[in-house]
Image 1 (cartoon, rainbow, N blue to C red):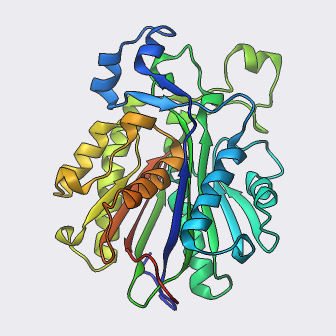
Image 2 (tube, rainbow, N blue to C red; image 1 turned 180 degrees about the vertical axis):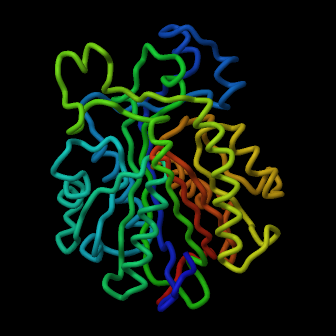
Amino acid sequence: MILNRNKSVGIIGTGSFVPEKVLTNHDLEKIVDTSDEWIKTRTGIVERRILDDDKATSYMATVAAERAIDDAGIKNEDIDMIIVSTVTPDMAFPSTACIVQDKLGCTNAAAFDLEAACSGFLYALSIAYAYVNSGLYKNVLVIGAETLSRIIDWADRNTCVLFGDGAGAAIVSTVPEGMGFLGINLGADGSGGKYLTQPAGGSKCPATHDTVDKRLHYIKMEGNEVFKFAVRAMEEAAKKVIEMSGLKLEDIDYLVPHQANIRIIESARKRLKLAKDKVYINLNKYGNMSSASIPVALDEAIKAGKIKNGDNILLVGFGGGLTWGSCIIKWHKNQEV
């Protein structure tokens, strides 16, 4: 969408968390019929993080949120709204966002979950932008958090090698004039939803002994179809938001893509004519963390000094639904508004 900028709205703080436990490709060789070489060649993934059994998505979301709030230099009570993007909530209800609100003590905040799979963080950012731009709220906490290890079929070598756990967060608020979000693009194609699903556990197919025996509570994916969609969606979403923002390809300073597959990222990078050092990649360490991938990568890129004030940052991703999203942010940190 072309932004109606009543205010300049951007990200004033970021934070992330990944579990300590590391699951390597060599570990997976002992579980399923696969190999380190096969996984690296086809995905670029070397290892991923796994959350401890006694913790849930809200734990990671809370830690990432605390770090983002601290990075923004605000207080917990300054948060007006909490949006948690996740396909692995602690439970169906209450929302993970409400659980996080309680853990943080953000007593002034509204809270809800959003589900758009790997595109979820971008969808949530768009909502946060709208609330702050309208003047209804000042500080919106956006979190992407996933415990995908709980819905992975460890007997399915085509999916178990891909995913990991983690959480990333951002504080959306007002920024100096001319900075912040320049464009946001979201989309969906529900006809492709069948290619990436968790069949059981909802109202259509509630849990029974039969659904458990048939392993229907795990991720099911038609990899070739998702790959073809992802290559197309990444490029189209990126180019569309660049055009909407009144920019050209050469105006993009840094790309933070969804971390699903190195071949998808490389294809997007080449088509956007970006140098390798202008793209942040961490999927080799974490695998695909769904809605946590982009915020974790963004936080790491910022902390590593890859992103500077005034840079035009492109965030782009795709996910189940099928969904996609992109946004451009003219970066500014340490603002006084």
